[in-house]
Length: 426
Ligand SMILES: Cc1cc2nc3c(=O)[nH]c(=O)nc-3n(C[C@H](O)[C@H](O)[C@H](O)COP(=O)(O)OP(=O)(O)OC[C@H]3O[C@@H](n4cnc5c(N)ncnc54)[C@H](O)[C@@H]3O)c2cc1C
Figure 1 (cartoon, rainbow, N blue to C red):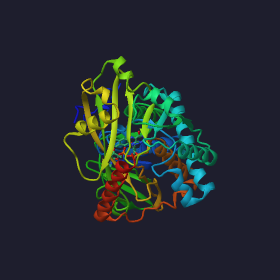
Figure 2 (cartoon, rainbow, N blue to C red; figure 1 turned 90 degrees about the horizontal axis):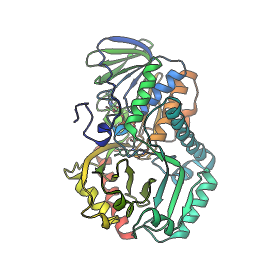
Figure 3 (tube, helix red, strand yellow; figure 1 turned 45 degrees about the vertical axis):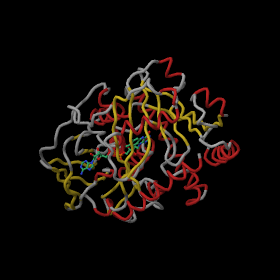
Figure 4 (spheres, rainbow, N blue to C red; figure 1 turned 90 degrees about the vertical axis):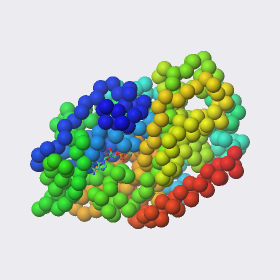
């Protein structure tokens, strides 16, 4: 843990300005109480304020302490569930509507960064997803179909071009998404929080909500040292809900993933391996995801697990990195390593909705949350402030039982099977 109260990671060390918000120590009144200061909560709070509601947000630790302040920083359209899964479940029109929401969210994030002067750059365009399989036609067909159905603007990159950017024989062809981009997620979190506070929102850190109960026509959220009385409450707690709401807690399971950041290395040497500033991931079920950072560092992420919290995260990440770029052996050293929890429902889609009048939730973003938390925030804010029912587009992905502990065992087996398939197929 850093002195600032974040886990020890690269983002906390490179946070431009750290504003600490007070602990809640009294009873306050507001239109809406948002519980959870990740991007789901912050986007909901900002959306509400922009629509004229008063808001108090309570965060158990620091804003962006969870996934929102420790992710890889790829701002990409779509959800953790891919377009093919949406198409199968919803048909083209409804699936397209959901994907379009994330394309709009990607634009809105950019507008907010520019309009509110949020210093979370450099914003570097383009995410390249590479294939470990020699099957260009399959990839071309996928790109053509997805562009046609979802207006995604994907480009096919032949292997020669992929290998100019990523100097490895492991990769074949690639899918390039020019409108996706990368940024510094914890600086973005702080920028959005600052805007909320400037517009009159009240933010409280180190103020875990301990209970939510009915209170006349509204809701009472009790924290350790204070309480919030509100007409509406929105739970945005991801996988850290604990006892706050049993039904919601049982509707998802945690998945752990890992990131390492290297020490600065020789720029010329790095370019003989990762000769690009685009963000990179691959098409295996359990993919690597990585990007170059300022000062010739590399952020390398990957793997998932349900329980294991290995002590040697950077050992694992170095192994994965050197498998792709063996030429870096002896020239690269890890400096930071951390893990983070993802909140997954079995359907891999966000969970947005209302459990009873005035009692809302906005969660379940999995490993793909930067654009979707903006979608969730806007929809829940519009529902509360304007009676808009757009959030109902997510009703087919409800908060059914995720299987409790058994669900986690099944998910672990699925994950092991996916990894086995990766080994067999590449
Ligand atoms: C290692 C890693 C890499 C990732 N990479 C990417 C990526 O490149 N691109 C992408 O789009 N997504 C990525 N993700 C996923 C993305 O970060 C998440 O989907 C998103 O941040 C989820 O936001 P959230 O607000 O729902 O949850 P969180 O950010 O986890 O926030 C939940 C907050 O609620 C608070 N809380 C919980 N209970 C209470 C309570 N009782 N009272 C008060 N507060 C409470 C917690 O303290 C926490 O701060 C990654 C995630 C991880 C972990």
